[in-house]
Amino acid sequence: MKKISPRAFLPLAIFLVLVVFLAIGLRLNPRELPSTLIDQPAPDFLLPQLGQPNQTFSPRAMRGQEWLLNVWGSWCVACGQEHPTLVAFARQQVLPIVGLNYKDGHEAATDWLKRLGDPYQLTAVDADGRIGIDYGVYGAPETFLIDREGIIRHKYIGPLTPELIEQDLLPRLQQLRAPAAP
Image (cartoon, rainbow, N blue to C red; front, side, top):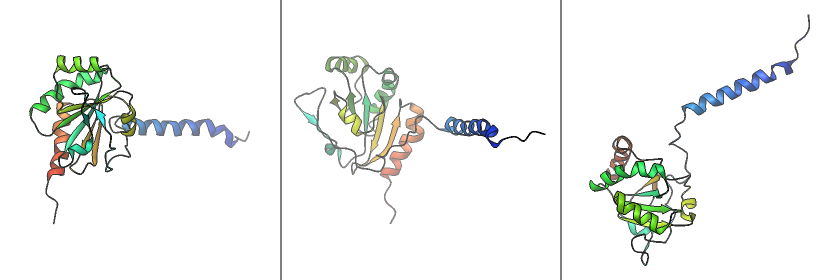
């Protein structure tokens, strides 16, 4: 009888390891990419506003209130899918939404908001994408829930949906607004 070399099992072992990694990967939610910014201060910036280019915006202006920073672009198909949800949510006046127009042209962005409605309290212009890099943006849309102290509490990757707002964002907001336990 011929003795089987341990090396003969190496391809099988590699295959089994790959199957395990694939099984783990299939259970992950692609909308939940880890972010080192969660529970960290939101990166500060000073950018011109889309509607009033002679005025600037900094996240420091939002201190004292919870707010959303929504990264979007007129070139972004998923942003167009998300936009009606943002418009409807903004009408409820639950919290301010600030837009971060990401790598877009001024005219294209302005026309897009005129055509589809403007859910933003204001929109800051990140024409070269440097602020998006500071926030760890993978692509648009991405939305950051920021608390009263300017701390990022959650990051949503992909379009916000009415279900996501109802089942995740609003409960998180309620937790932020709950009085601290004595």
